[in-house]
Image (tube, rainbow, N blue to C red; front, side, top):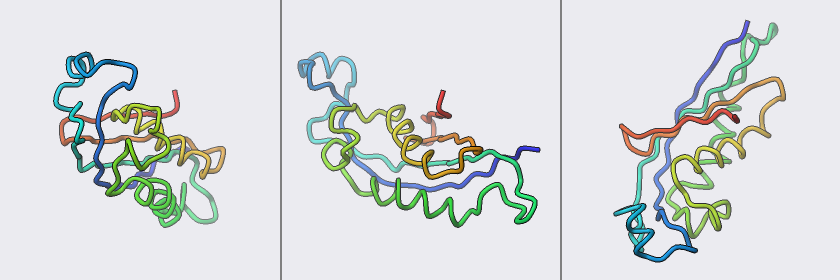
Amino acid sequence: MKVTVSRKAHFNAAHRLYRKDWSFEKNDDMFGKCNNPNFHGHNYELIVSVTGHIDKETGYVIDMKVLKDIIKTNVEDAFDHKNLNVEVPEFKDLNPTAENIAVVIYNKIKPELKDDLSLEITLYETPRNFVSYSGN
């Protein structure tokens, strides 16, 4: 029997949506106020969901303290109170859209999990706008 366990986390970060190879006008047409050259910020809410079989000895899919530590190291410490475009290496040449941020988070966390566990990342950029990514 497989069970999904989830942990919530959050981080605050600034970003600018734009492509270096586009003119300011084209970026402005595509990304609007998110193209602000002085950046803008979000209070991101994150849900990390891990699915797997319940361990017969522990009763856990994953120890939630272990998951908490993985999230803290790979997401909160790396992204919180940062300018994603400037301070986070993964976004040096990658537009930090919610979609791309979710994929980056997935790629940072997945190697930390046992191979038989599946992962889904749900990232809320605002209370109404969110994305999910599960490696597909």
